[in-house]
Length: 119
Length: 269
Image (cartoon, rainbow over all chains, first blue to last red):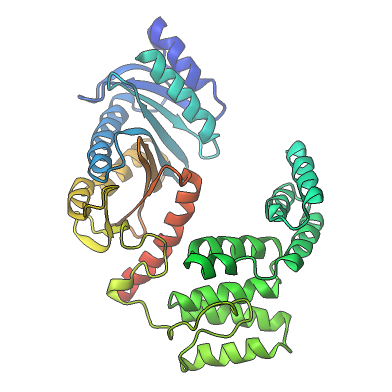
């Protein structure tokens, strides 16, 4: 697993310690660049970050137009895993890549805690 | 989980008429205690032979009624009341094939029930001006004859079909449903435009992560919840509800809407 700078490392630890989480990242929401990452080998962090930011941006606009308000948490479900994202107040995305049978509620809580720590 | 069983058992013992038997039976089923689950379900269903009908009679809440009969059937697959209840609901939303399939299943369990035979004849014959008299639906007012799903009825019978369900093609063109914001304004076109390309992007993200095909995207906003799902390879279905609807329940609503959308899309092909 790749390592993150110490300050962010502790934040990402909150997420990666959850069983079934394969990695976590902090992503700049506006440009999709990786701020920090703790990912299993083989996950292409920069590419995932760019796509996650793009998806987050589209979703935010759609949800705001629908009157649902700014997205706080979203969860992309796939056959063999999931991508879970929370937006911090600063616009940084806290992203988790997880196994399909992960405890989504627990990951959500840790992502929210991590987002609060990021500010 | 053992504590939950104890807690629910205590609740049921305290109030045997409550609907807590559904949760208890489901929990026991998950734990693999199938006999116990079956006993609890059957005892409960004997006390509530028409448990789903109240939702229909009060406010035509098909989804709630469907959920309850569906849950009852998962626990007790041969329960005639649940089979007839689901048959009635399918008939109400125009899915005569599913209605007939459930009635056939009910007839296998209760071959001497004249109500089932009559309802089956009605479903197969497509005649008459009432829904099948299944018995589970007796409190209901007469229902219109079942019709095949029409273009305007892609989400027929689903809660919020005209304000919280939207079916789009990959370019963001609306295929069915409509969306209103909390103030009641029609936001269908705006939301559809923003969602154009989301399906492909979600697919690319899942592929890049080696996660296979994407199956859904749940989002939690400040004022509500949304769920996106691809009913077919290229179309996109959006379901939006207020925060009072939990995300897990929204996923169930979305699955059900996806089935209706898939059926409709196949009929158009």
